[in-house]
Structures are given as structure tokens and as C-alpha cells.
Image (tube, rainbow, N blue to C red; front, side, top):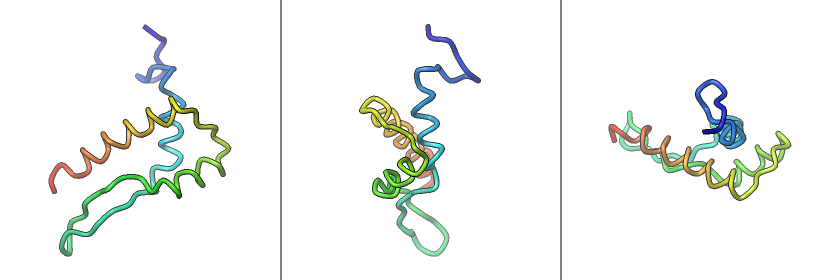
Length: 80
């Protein structure tokens, strides 16, 4: 297996760094007055954020970033 860095396989680190860089760029929809449905990342804002951070995104990194996004959406919407 690949070496780990703080529990993350080194090969997945670029996607995690990219996700963390843009992790505030969510699209959401209000559900009533107190709840939110998380729809996913705003890809236009993500692209701008990654460009500003000078992070080059390969197709593999983009695929992994979207897997992280899917897991986050699932977790964020767990009680919706």
C-alpha cells in the first residue's frame, strides 16, 4: 500500500488539499426556517478558488474531489 500522511494515502493528498481549499463554496437550498439541504459545490466558484490558489487539477484529482464532495453531501444531508 502507498505510504500514509496523517491517515491519508499520499496519492489522495492533492484531492484533499483541493477540496479543503474550496470547502466553503457550497450550493444549498433552505428547507423551512432552520434546515438546509446541501446540493453540492458551486463548480464555477470552485474553479475560481482553485485557480487563485494555483492548484492544478488533473482529471484524477477532479474525480477524487467529487467523491469527497459526494461523501460530504451525504453526511451534511443525513438528517434532512
